Each structure stands twice: as C-alpha cells, then as structure tokens.
Image (tube, rainbow, N blue to C red):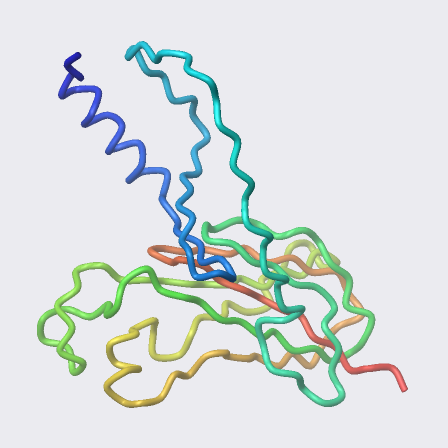
Length: 198
C-alpha cells in the first residue's frame, strides 16, 4: 500500500498549523496530543481488527495560581491561553487593583543577529494586554507589555527571569475587559488581584 506524498505533506502541515503539545504524566511517560479545529480526512483504508482500549493516566492536579501569593491581595479573576482574544467582562469592586501576568515564549530568543543576547532567532514572541474600561465607553485605560520583551536567551544569560510581572491600577469600582494580543507564545496567564476584605 502506498501513501500519497501529497497526503503526507498535508498531514504534516495540518499538525504544524494547529499545534502539537506533549504533556508529562506523573509516571514520567509522555502523552502526545494534537489539537485541531478541522476534521482530518484520510483516503487510506483502515482494517478493523479487534480494538484495544488503554486507560489514560490520571492528570496531575493543577495549582490554583501561576503566581506567588501576595499578602493582602486576593485573586478576582484569571485568564490563560495561547492565542489572543478579548476576555470576558469582569467587575472590580475596589478603587485599587493589580494585574499580574506571565508568558512562556515559544522560542528561546527573540532578538536579531546583532542583539546583546546573541540570539539569532527571527521569531519575536509578543504579549500585549489592553485594559478596557467597559463602564466608560470602552476607554483604553492602559496597554501593558512585558518590559524588555520576551527573550528567554537574555534571561538565561543574565541569570534572572523577570516573570511574573505586575501592574498597579489606582482606579476601580468599574467593569473592565482585556484585549489580549499574542505572537509565538506557548501560553500566558493573567490574574486580576484586589485587596482582601478585612
């Protein structure tokens, strides 16, 4: 049986475009999964032998926060993902709040060949969070970006990982949403924290 080279190329492109992730289980074995939004069509006939069902390992519990605890602050809402989007609207019931955020760049480095870090990557990971005041005609309160960019190579050379970052807001008692723009990220996590009620 011969598989068409065009079919092989199409499947490889489908995997590259939709993304492929590998998860680590508690036993150390790896589980590979492919996420796609389009159906995979194969013209290769498949015989129907007796099927074998194997159980998936129990997933490890996820931590409640991607960030360290901060005394006096409680997490109001958390957003995470890989791709850009507009978040759900959330209400900040206090006059002060903090935006905590982190990102995991898809590639190490993000500078050009003449960068101080020595990275030769042509890919520039990017994260931008526009804070929108939904109570006041969709006013842009601020656009938040990681200071210094997202360059793992530079972080490794300096011996200092700046993540997570935080931004303080001295306004509130309003409804907000975020317009999140990303490029070349494995993931991002954003938390809104407010003072704990006493």
